[in-house]
Length: 192
Image (cartoon, one colour):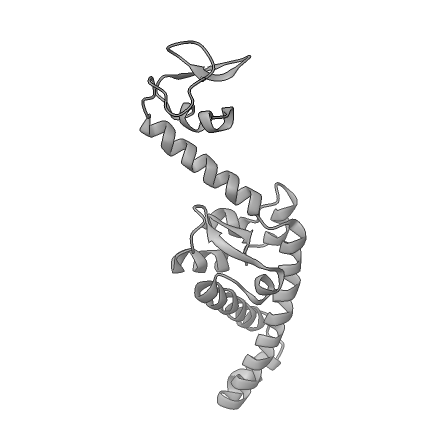
């Protein structure tokens, strides 16, 4: 058994300790593991095993996380589809409620903002709740997941959609590369 395979056991053993020169060693023998099949000193530490699982999952998610370029492409593509969605909603509004359409045409900035907000939140929420992907994510091969890599719950998706309309959310990607709508909803965009 090679060192990497031995470390799978040693990292979650109650008897392990860390040595600056050798790395993880046995706390009982003060040596690097040398067992081939099983270790006679192995005692699984449930807490260490759970921490190792979480770290492994985080490494896997970070490895698969969508690039800044993919996220930017998602933004542009989704804006194009939101404009198309708004156009279709405007036609339907004109057909079924001409007085509301007339009010929107009067250049009322608050009413126009509310209309755009409702359209945007509906677009993002509908697509991400039903498929974990917007049209932008479908085209770039990405999807939204929660911190554990699972499909997010409906409430999480709604929160994520609402947080997109926090002023300057788009600029929140300039720091460490995670948008506020990801941070507040505890979600990530990963490659499918």
